[in-house]
Length: 239
Image (cartoon, rainbow, N blue to C red; front, top):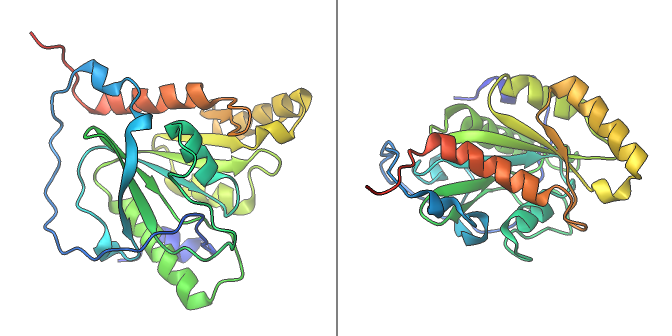
């Protein structure tokens, strides 16, 4: 079923990472939070490793541990942000040709959590039929994924809050989300402060500056996302 995102937002989807998509007919088993020790969350992102790719809703891996989804316009630095958070250089690959990749790429964070890297949107030079297929894939995932616990919306700090960004934020509603203003190193300190103030006024306090080049905001972002996961997974010290 195509949700409101596919019908109300004229997204032109184009991904930044590339991997073949295996087909799976595995039965979806509800994930039950397990009891883990708090130390499992220490250095969680550096444990990231490729898990699977999905080109169609039926290809999505069965829900498991809690997932954080990363979404943004094509060429906003989404792959670079994921690599910076994981402390890796080539975990997520950036395509030199926007619009080439058509999949949601999943990465495991050990046994505790997952990342979902969604195809980028906003690239117009894509056939309409393919664009619609990506719309259905992204909207199906965001609307029905039971293990999704938060969404990171990445915007270019130089060009934040485009009409497509605003449509996505409106569609996400009050769900847990973070606006990550990438490529902040391209702005002066005064421009950074003005941009952050503008975005926070529009979306609330859930926004921060980020640069994969200078590592501005990397630790702060990682700490926040891990705190989201800690709130979902029941954490108890061994007795």
